[in-house]
Image 1 (cartoon, rainbow, N blue to C red):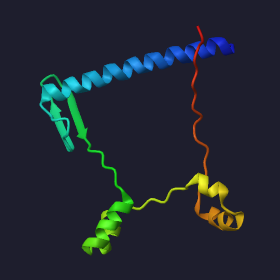
Image 2 (image 1 turned 90 degrees about the vertical axis):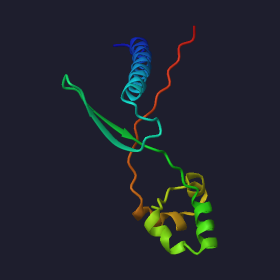
Image 3 (image 1 turned 135 degrees about the vertical axis):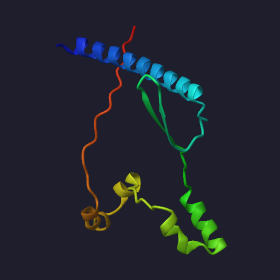
Image 4 (image 1 turned 180 degrees about the vertical axis):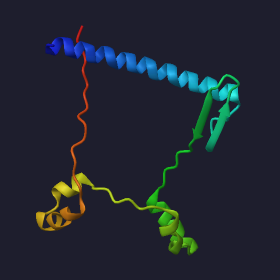
Amino acid sequence: MDLETCSQQWLDAKQAEREAVELRRDMENKLLSLIGIAENMEGTETVETDTGYKLKIVGRINRKVDGDRVQEIAAEEGLTEHLASLFRWKPEINMAAWKNAKEAITTPLLGGITTTPGRASFTITKES
């Protein structure tokens, strides 16, 4: 297979994928409506039909935590000792700062960092 053919097949596959996701999400919305489940449901609901279908719906609510603000409020309210049990604090690398830091600082910390390659991402366009 040549690069042209492979690129076109990739574009075709991405379009089919978008259409499949759109159809699946439309069906999920219709199922929620038919069953009578609210969009903001949190938890698990299982429904069985007379014809043998079993639907398990898991509703999730996304929550984003402003760590600095939570710590500020906890300090103001005297709740700091509860933070460790109520929240998980996940260290993440600030790559811009990491790259600009001296090796004397970053090298000893490498023992606590696992590095694995991620999957390459592609963008393919075709000029008309």
